[in-house]
Image 1 (cartoon, rainbow, N blue to C red):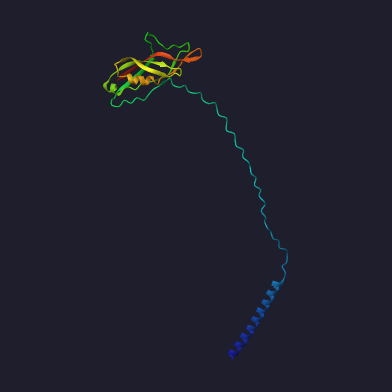
Image 2: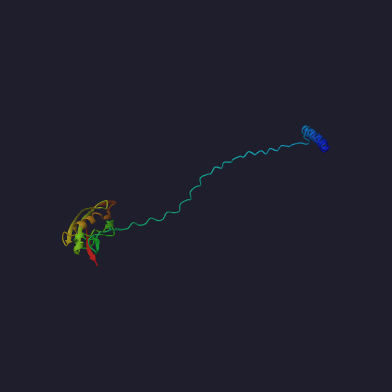
Length: 201
């Protein structure tokens, strides 16, 4: 009897389950077939066309330069770096003003006379420097129309033949403003210059 009652209850429960499932299925089909109520609006966001404006850059004018500094005066004298290898001596070679044989100065400051522009100090001979020999040389030369020195020669030397070459080499590097007569440059012969060689210290 117990088994029979259990079967009857199970059959009734199963029957109601099938009915409920059928109702659910029918309700779902109706929901799918019903049209959608209301309006659906689709929003599409469009990007605005971006316009690129090209700006032409005009080259800026450079600032006007300031007034240039005044030119520096060129030095009237040039000096050589003297290499006195082989001895710890402090020496000097002096270039003195032009003199003539009759005495007095051959350099005048008027009448368009020649003027010294560059005087190069001579190189002190190493042999004389190492032996402590001092002296001087008077050289004579021609100042050309271009202001250069031509045909230098030794007039007097003390001591002899020691400083001659150094004095002549230095004289060839001298520069002058040439003598001007009637608006034209002329040569000046017989110009003399005394170059002294002394060791200090």
